[in-house]
Image 1 (cartoon, rainbow, N blue to C red):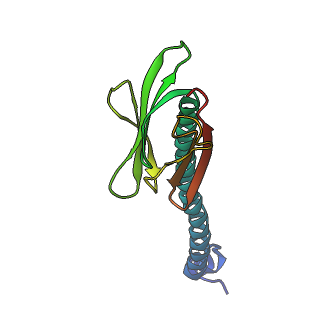
Image 2 (image 1 turned 30 degrees about the vertical axis):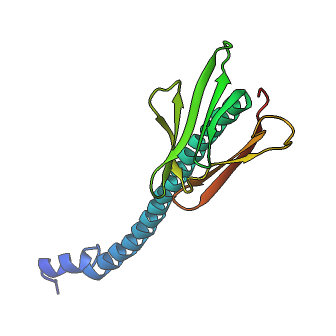
Length: 173
C-alpha cells in the first residue's frame, strides 16, 4: 500500500520543531546577556580608570609647577592655608610674582594660579580640601618667617581620594 504523497512528505521532512527553536533562542539569549554584562562592566571600569588618570595627571602637573616655583622663590609676599603668593625667578633670570589659591565653597575645590597680577587660571579642579599649604620656620634666628612650605593636594576621584604631598625648602630667601 502506498502512502499518500502528503504523508510521505511530512514524515520525510527534517528540521527544527518550535520547541527546539525556543530552547536554542533561550540559550543564545543567556550567552548574549553574559557577554553584554562583561562588556558593560569593562566599559564602566574604563571610565573609572580614565577619571583616575586625569585627576592624578592634573595633580602631578600642579605639584611640579608649585614645587619648582616655590623652591626658586626670592620673597614670600603673603601666605595662608588656602593661598600662597611669592616672587620667583624664571629661567631667564627675571623675577615674576606667582600666586596660588584654592577656590570654592564645597568640594570639589579648584586650585588656581596667577602670574604677574593677571587673571587666575584653574589648574586643578578635583580637590577635596581647600587647605593645601602649611608652613614651617626651621630656625627662628633668621628674618624669614617661613623656611619650608608643605603642599598637600587631596584629589578626589570617582572611587577614592588620593593625596599628593611635597615639602619645599625656600632656597633663595
